[in-house]
Structures are given as structure tokens and as C-alpha cells.
Image 1 (cartoon, helix red, strand yellow):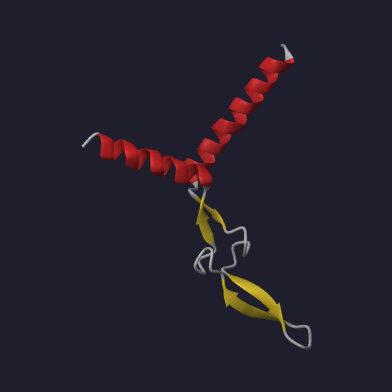
Image 2: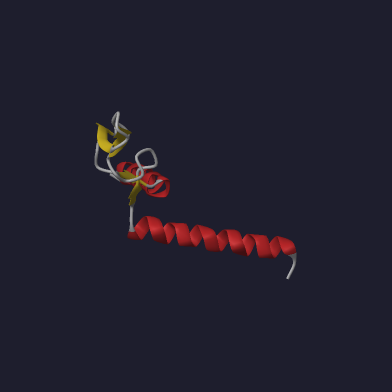
Length: 83
């Protein structure tokens, strides 16, 4: 097998796996707060304390995956075009 075919096969496999992840679990952890929904602060004594709510995920800790977002855009355009 040539290296080009091997690279194409690996890329196809990774793409199919990501499609499966987006279909099975459309929401992933927020990258900013790492799925906690808020920041972690330390007080003067060094103890951990709950910080402000995450603005990116609106304190849910979950964000829609990029692949699922693209699929939703495509599906909405297709649905609007076939009315």
C-alpha cells in the first residue's frame, strides 16, 4: 500500500469516528472552564473557591461540537430550501 493511500485511509477513519462522536454526543465540555461551568479562584489563604460563571457556555459546562454545529447549519439550509 502506498503512503498516499494509507494517509487517505487514516484520514477517512478519523473523519468517520468524529462523525460518530458528533452523532452520539453532540455536546462536549467547554474548553474555557473545562466542563465545570465556572472559574476556580483562590482566596488569600490559598483555599480554592468558586469563581464567576463561564460566559462562553453560560454556566452549563457544555458546548456544541463543531461538527454538530456544521451539520445543524447544513440541515437548516436544506430544510429551508425544500419548503
